[in-house]
Length: 266
Image (cartoon, rainbow, N blue to C red):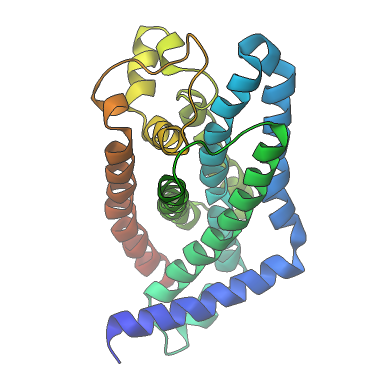
Protein backbone atom coordinates (compact mmCIF):
# COMPACT_ATOMS: atom_id res chain seq x y z
CA UNK A 1 0.00 0.00 0.00
CA UNK A 2 1.42 3.38 -0.99
CA UNK A 3 1.84 6.24 1.47
CA UNK A 4 -0.87 8.25 -0.30
CA UNK A 5 -3.33 5.35 -0.31
CA UNK A 6 -2.73 4.70 3.38
CA UNK A 7 -3.12 8.39 4.15
CA UNK A 8 -6.45 8.55 2.33
CA UNK A 9 -7.72 5.38 3.98
CA UNK A 10 -6.67 6.42 7.48
CA UNK A 11 -7.96 9.94 6.86
CA UNK A 12 -11.36 8.50 5.93
CA UNK A 13 -11.47 6.56 9.20
CA UNK A 14 -10.59 9.66 11.24
CA UNK A 15 -13.17 11.69 9.30
CA UNK A 16 -15.85 9.12 10.14
CA UNK A 17 -14.83 9.29 13.80
CA UNK A 18 -15.19 13.08 13.72
CA UNK A 19 -18.62 12.86 12.05
CA UNK A 20 -19.79 10.47 14.77
CA UNK A 21 -18.74 13.10 17.29
CA UNK A 22 -20.84 15.68 15.42
CA UNK A 23 -23.81 13.33 15.63
CA UNK A 24 -23.32 13.10 19.38
CA UNK A 25 -22.82 16.88 19.69
CA UNK A 26 -25.51 18.34 17.47
CA UNK A 27 -24.80 21.83 18.80
CA UNK A 28 -21.86 21.92 16.38
CA UNK A 29 -24.15 21.28 13.43
CA UNK A 30 -26.71 23.74 14.78
CA UNK A 31 -24.05 26.43 15.10
CA UNK A 32 -22.99 25.80 11.50
CA UNK A 33 -26.47 26.52 10.14
CA UNK A 34 -28.27 28.75 12.65
CA UNK A 35 -25.78 31.64 12.47
CA UNK A 36 -25.93 32.02 8.65
CA UNK A 37 -29.74 31.82 8.72
CA UNK A 38 -29.73 34.66 11.24
CA UNK A 39 -27.44 36.70 8.96
CA UNK A 40 -29.78 36.09 6.01
CA UNK A 41 -32.85 37.20 7.94
CA UNK A 42 -31.04 40.19 9.46
CA UNK A 43 -29.59 41.57 6.24
CA UNK A 44 -32.47 40.52 3.98
CA UNK A 45 -35.33 41.93 6.03
CA UNK A 46 -33.81 44.45 8.46
CA UNK A 47 -31.37 46.15 6.05
CA UNK A 48 -32.57 44.76 2.74
CA UNK A 49 -35.37 47.28 2.27
CA UNK A 50 -32.90 50.15 2.33
CA UNK A 51 -30.30 48.35 0.22
CA UNK A 52 -32.31 47.10 -2.73
CA UNK A 53 -35.13 44.82 -1.63
CA UNK A 54 -35.57 41.56 -3.57
CA UNK A 55 -32.55 42.20 -5.79
CA UNK A 56 -30.38 42.75 -2.72
CA UNK A 57 -31.51 39.42 -1.28
CA UNK A 58 -30.23 37.67 -4.40
CA UNK A 59 -27.00 39.66 -4.14
CA UNK A 60 -26.67 38.75 -0.45
CA UNK A 61 -26.89 34.95 -0.61
CA UNK A 62 -23.52 34.41 -2.31
CA UNK A 63 -21.87 36.43 0.46
CA UNK A 64 -23.60 34.33 3.11
CA UNK A 65 -22.47 31.15 1.35
CA UNK A 66 -18.83 32.21 1.47
CA UNK A 67 -19.08 33.62 5.00
CA UNK A 68 -20.60 30.34 6.21
CA UNK A 69 -17.89 28.16 4.67
CA UNK A 70 -15.19 30.44 6.08
CA UNK A 71 -16.67 30.58 9.57
CA UNK A 72 -17.01 26.79 9.64
CA UNK A 73 -13.21 26.60 9.65
CA UNK A 74 -13.55 27.45 13.36
CA UNK A 75 -14.72 23.85 13.88
CA UNK A 76 -11.35 22.68 12.55
CA UNK A 77 -9.58 25.04 14.94
CA UNK A 78 -11.51 23.90 18.00
CA UNK A 79 -11.61 20.22 17.02
CA UNK A 80 -7.85 19.91 16.60
CA UNK A 81 -7.03 21.90 19.73
CA UNK A 82 -9.55 19.84 21.72
CA UNK A 83 -8.03 16.56 20.51
CA UNK A 84 -4.57 17.80 21.45
CA UNK A 85 -5.70 18.93 24.89
CA UNK A 86 -7.50 15.66 25.61
CA UNK A 87 -4.52 13.56 24.56
CA UNK A 88 -6.33 11.95 21.63
CA UNK A 89 -3.53 12.96 19.25
CA UNK A 90 -1.08 11.07 21.50
CA UNK A 91 -3.26 7.97 21.15
CA UNK A 92 -3.25 8.34 17.38
CA UNK A 93 0.54 8.52 17.45
CA UNK A 94 0.71 5.06 19.02
CA UNK A 95 -1.23 3.57 16.10
CA UNK A 96 0.27 2.45 12.77
CA UNK A 97 -1.44 5.22 10.84
CA UNK A 98 -0.40 7.96 8.45
CA UNK A 99 0.74 11.25 9.95
CA UNK A 100 -1.46 13.03 7.41
CA UNK A 101 -4.59 11.14 8.52
CA UNK A 102 -5.44 13.31 11.53
CA UNK A 103 -5.38 16.56 9.55
CA UNK A 104 -7.00 15.09 6.45
CA UNK A 105 -9.71 13.46 8.55
CA UNK A 106 -10.47 16.67 10.40
CA UNK A 107 -10.62 18.86 7.30
CA UNK A 108 -12.69 16.29 5.40
CA UNK A 109 -15.26 15.88 8.17
CA UNK A 110 -15.59 19.65 8.45
CA UNK A 111 -16.06 19.80 4.68
CA UNK A 112 -19.05 17.46 5.12
CA UNK A 113 -20.47 19.82 7.77
CA UNK A 114 -19.98 22.75 5.38
CA UNK A 115 -21.77 20.79 2.65
CA UNK A 116 -24.77 20.31 4.91
CA UNK A 117 -24.70 24.01 5.80
CA UNK A 118 -24.60 24.98 2.09
CA UNK A 119 -27.64 22.79 1.36
CA UNK A 120 -29.59 24.37 4.22
CA UNK A 121 -28.46 27.85 3.15
CA UNK A 122 -29.64 27.15 -0.40
CA UNK A 123 -33.09 26.24 0.91
CA UNK A 124 -33.11 29.33 3.11
CA UNK A 125 -32.08 31.46 0.14
CA UNK A 126 -34.88 30.04 -2.00
CA UNK A 127 -37.30 30.89 0.80
CA UNK A 128 -36.29 34.59 0.80
CA UNK A 129 -36.36 34.96 -2.97
CA UNK A 130 -32.90 33.91 -4.17
CA UNK A 131 -32.85 32.00 -7.45
CA UNK A 132 -30.27 30.23 -9.61
CA UNK A 133 -30.52 32.08 -12.92
CA UNK A 134 -27.49 30.56 -14.64
CA UNK A 135 -27.15 27.16 -16.28
CA UNK A 136 -27.10 23.86 -14.39
CA UNK A 137 -23.40 23.36 -15.17
CA UNK A 138 -22.58 26.85 -13.91
CA UNK A 139 -24.51 26.18 -10.70
CA UNK A 140 -22.70 22.87 -10.14
CA UNK A 141 -19.36 24.60 -10.68
CA UNK A 142 -20.39 27.33 -8.21
CA UNK A 143 -21.10 24.74 -5.52
CA UNK A 144 -17.84 22.92 -6.25
CA UNK A 145 -15.98 26.22 -5.97
CA UNK A 146 -17.63 26.85 -2.59
CA UNK A 147 -16.55 23.40 -1.38
CA UNK A 148 -12.98 23.95 -2.60
CA UNK A 149 -12.87 27.26 -0.74
CA UNK A 150 -14.33 25.60 2.37
CA UNK A 151 -11.65 22.90 2.21
CA UNK A 152 -8.92 25.53 1.82
CA UNK A 153 -10.23 27.50 4.80
CA UNK A 154 -10.24 24.33 6.91
CA UNK A 155 -6.49 24.06 6.43
CA UNK A 156 -6.10 27.64 7.63
CA UNK A 157 -8.13 26.58 10.66
CA UNK A 158 -5.89 23.52 11.12
CA UNK A 159 -2.78 25.68 11.43
CA UNK A 160 -4.51 28.03 13.89
CA UNK A 161 -5.78 25.10 15.97
CA UNK A 162 -2.35 23.47 16.14
CA UNK A 163 -0.79 26.82 17.11
CA UNK A 164 -3.32 27.66 19.85
CA UNK A 165 -2.25 26.99 23.44
CA UNK A 166 -5.74 26.20 24.76
CA UNK A 167 -9.24 25.43 23.52
CA UNK A 168 -10.46 28.73 24.95
CA UNK A 169 -7.85 30.65 22.95
CA UNK A 170 -8.70 28.60 19.85
CA UNK A 171 -12.37 29.58 20.11
CA UNK A 172 -11.44 33.25 19.81
CA UNK A 173 -8.54 32.88 17.38
CA UNK A 174 -10.61 30.80 14.98
CA UNK A 175 -13.14 33.59 14.42
CA UNK A 176 -11.36 36.84 15.33
CA UNK A 177 -9.56 37.29 12.01
CA UNK A 178 -12.57 36.23 9.92
CA UNK A 179 -14.80 39.18 10.80
CA UNK A 180 -12.64 41.94 9.25
CA UNK A 181 -11.70 39.78 6.25
CA UNK A 182 -15.36 38.95 5.59
CA UNK A 183 -16.73 42.45 6.05
CA UNK A 184 -13.95 44.09 3.99
CA UNK A 185 -15.23 42.22 0.95
CA UNK A 186 -18.26 42.31 -1.30
CA UNK A 187 -20.23 39.93 0.95
CA UNK A 188 -22.81 42.50 2.07
CA UNK A 189 -22.15 45.60 -0.02
CA UNK A 190 -20.30 46.25 -3.24
CA UNK A 191 -16.57 46.87 -2.92
CA UNK A 192 -17.02 49.97 -5.09
CA UNK A 193 -18.94 51.66 -2.24
CA UNK A 194 -15.93 51.57 0.12
CA UNK A 195 -13.36 54.36 0.55
CA UNK A 196 -10.00 54.20 -1.24
CA UNK A 197 -7.73 51.84 0.77
CA UNK A 198 -10.57 49.57 1.89
CA UNK A 199 -11.88 49.43 -1.65
CA UNK A 200 -8.52 48.21 -2.97
CA UNK A 201 -8.29 45.57 -0.24
CA UNK A 202 -11.86 44.44 -0.84
CA UNK A 203 -11.39 44.16 -4.61
CA UNK A 204 -8.35 41.89 -4.24
CA UNK A 205 -9.67 40.01 -1.19
CA UNK A 206 -9.95 36.28 -2.04
CA UNK A 207 -13.31 36.29 -0.27
CA UNK A 208 -14.55 38.88 -2.78
CA UNK A 209 -13.23 36.74 -5.64
CA UNK A 210 -15.16 33.67 -4.49
CA UNK A 211 -18.28 35.70 -3.75
CA UNK A 212 -18.24 37.42 -7.14
CA UNK A 213 -17.50 34.15 -8.92
CA UNK A 214 -20.46 32.47 -7.23
CA UNK A 215 -22.71 35.41 -8.10
CA UNK A 216 -21.61 35.26 -11.73
CA UNK A 217 -22.13 31.50 -11.95
CA UNK A 218 -25.55 31.66 -10.29
CA UNK A 219 -26.51 34.60 -12.52
CA UNK A 220 -27.28 36.93 -9.60
CA UNK A 221 -26.93 40.62 -10.45
CA UNK A 222 -25.95 43.35 -8.01
CA UNK A 223 -28.42 46.12 -7.06
CA UNK A 224 -27.77 49.59 -8.50
CA UNK A 225 -24.69 51.15 -6.95
CA UNK A 226 -23.19 47.80 -5.86
CA UNK A 227 -21.86 46.53 -9.18
CA UNK A 228 -18.20 45.50 -8.99
CA UNK A 229 -15.67 48.04 -10.19
CA UNK A 230 -13.98 47.08 -13.46
CA UNK A 231 -10.58 45.48 -13.05
CA UNK A 232 -8.79 42.14 -13.29
CA UNK A 233 -10.25 40.63 -10.07
CA UNK A 234 -13.83 41.39 -11.10
CA UNK A 235 -13.37 40.59 -14.78
CA UNK A 236 -11.76 37.22 -14.01
CA UNK A 237 -13.57 36.40 -10.76
CA UNK A 238 -13.92 32.65 -11.39
CA UNK A 239 -10.26 32.22 -12.33
CA UNK A 240 -9.09 34.40 -9.42
CA UNK A 241 -11.32 32.49 -6.97
CA UNK A 242 -9.94 29.17 -8.18
CA UNK A 243 -6.34 30.37 -8.02
CA UNK A 244 -6.87 31.90 -4.56
CA UNK A 245 -8.28 28.66 -3.15
CA UNK A 246 -5.44 26.60 -4.63
CA UNK A 247 -2.88 29.12 -3.33
CA UNK A 248 -4.32 28.88 0.18
CA UNK A 249 -4.04 25.09 0.01
CA UNK A 250 -0.49 25.28 -1.36
CA UNK A 251 0.58 27.47 1.56
CA UNK A 252 -1.37 26.08 4.50
CA UNK A 253 -1.30 22.33 3.84
CA UNK A 254 2.51 22.04 4.19
CA UNK A 255 2.54 24.55 7.07
CA UNK A 256 -0.14 22.58 8.92
CA UNK A 257 1.58 19.24 8.32
CA UNK A 258 4.92 20.64 9.52
CA UNK A 259 3.26 22.14 12.62
CA UNK A 260 1.47 18.86 13.36
CA UNK A 261 4.75 16.94 13.22
CA UNK A 262 6.31 19.35 15.70
CA UNK A 263 3.30 19.29 18.03
CA UNK A 264 2.79 15.53 17.85
CA UNK A 265 6.48 14.80 18.53
CA UNK A 266 6.51 16.58 21.88
